[in-house]
Image 1 (spheres, helix red, strand yellow):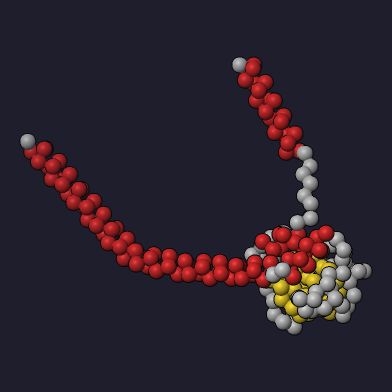
Image 2: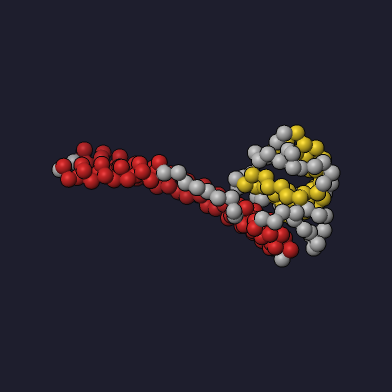
Length: 197
């Protein structure tokens, strides 16, 4: 008995140690996260206004996600870009609020994707530029659109089947109700006959 208690205590101790240990999460996979996420937004935009952590960009070139040319996009960042971003300059703006990727804003040389140069020499920025140039973001966006269309089509088929089976389900309910009434009546008849005997 004591052996079982010691084992349980040891297990609880190990569980506590593993849950209390800090877990490091690195941001080195932002380009890949943006590439694989169906809810990511990536575009080239011109900074129109900035205020502490609030930035307003005019969308110029779509790369992936929600985009409306020359419309304003308000971006709230938890990273302090205030001093590094300049009004009137072009930036690669990327984020995925639903996917948990904070805004990542990088200065670029222009709005043309083919000649785009990201003015950041980090490994992540190089990978981001490579994905943009080799069409990975465009392919990702087209797959997302295909998937959404497939889901809509599948949902329409499911709705059609559900609507067809709705009548069948009503018939089954009525049939089950009738069978229940017949069983009750037969039980009453059997009970009455048995009582008379």
